[in-house]
Length: 70
Image: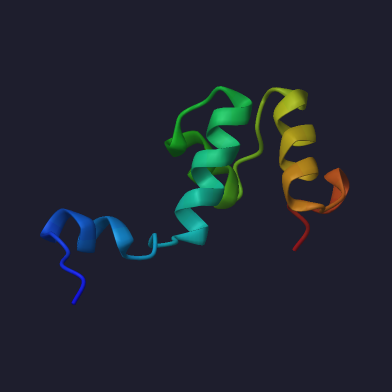
């Protein structure tokens, strides 16, 4: 019988994934902005810095001119 500790059990559990949070954190990190800024962009507020639009386009694969189309 293999014995395992509680810590070993916990460490063996799969990592939880939170795709939306991971996306927001990734964009915030790449753009050097807060997660609140990224959430604002998602809600429709366009970034002032054109570089941030480029980052959003690169991460999502959505063309820059289509990021906020209705």
